Image (cartoon, rainbow, N blue to C red; front, side, top):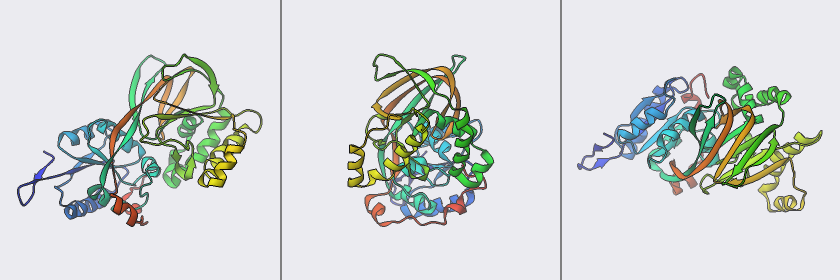
Length: 352
């Protein structure tokens, strides 16, 4: 099972790795994991690979059934999301390895984003922290529905269209910067989406928006702070709607997200300026635990940066403390600065 016997006969813990073999250099990662497990006195790590048929959920459940006390996700944000889905409510911790391009959850937990060797070591020597999970039920035009987990953000509108239109080849070459190209392709087609919504069981209301995003976290690649108050352990979700008005509408949206959220909020003086300035109607925030919406026309949906097809209705809600995540022990977090150069040795030729 997931425990082996130590020299004194006492059981020792075992970890598992769920690896996307297309994205990661498995041989180098195995060497790092073996060294870290030996140094920490853990048993031999269990290894599982994702497939097209099973992107991670099934093999993660196999790892849990085999007794793993922590499961490392070795792949992009899609692999991390799939592993989290398999771990939901199990009490087994997720280990984050920075081998993708977005590393969305690690970014929001203020964890190392460059050094895979350090990340592996921290999995074996760190502590487990509970965070919330976002859950969503996506209903299609044919009436079929599916339920999924998201760790950072679910959205429809410009973000989902941007992801759907991002050039895959360009993404492999330049990572998240390829989304800039996707935005350029999406904007000409973007129109307000008419929808009905209910927040925490309130009466249904009708509105329109260019984009609706539900966040468990708020920080995106490039330092873009989309939802300043979002926290992955506060027991609720944060909702942001983008509704640009007039010829300079998108400029106002960008000023709000990039300048106010990304610059002014970092200082006390800047926060005073925000408090004194007129609020931007084009960007609206709300919080809640349960959010339902139905769409007049089917729209593209994205979860944690991956496209999930089109939907006619979306129901999102929070599972408080639904996932344990392995983070550096406090002393290690204070003393260990990330070191660059290791990630390139691990990531394969097709990073997520």
